[in-house]
Length: 110
Image (cartoon, rainbow, N blue to C red; front, side, top):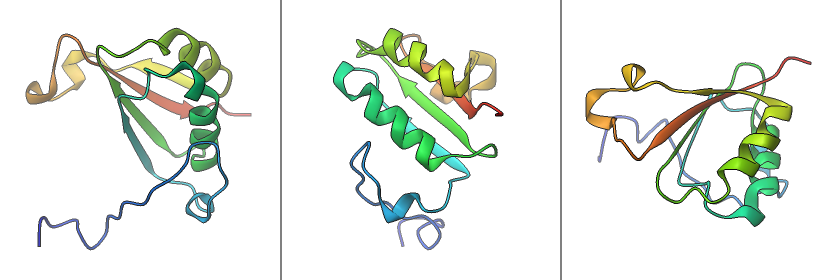
């Protein structure tokens, strides 16, 4: 066994923006990294995040140098999610990096 979560965590491919049986139930936690570099994927990414989340879901997005789509993503994300920049003080020392930002998104109440 690789680690102690192997029996409770699984990984599956998912095409952003597509309907999938994986999205029938909402997730407690969604973690994404390096997803701010492709402008054409912003709408599909946001669509998938909306389908996969509810008011209880925490979405953490980490991204570094490749952030060409950051402005567009943030403008559109604010329509559906509250968006908070996670401060360095909230991150473990091991994971702090000057060129990486971490965002926390939560579904806005209707």
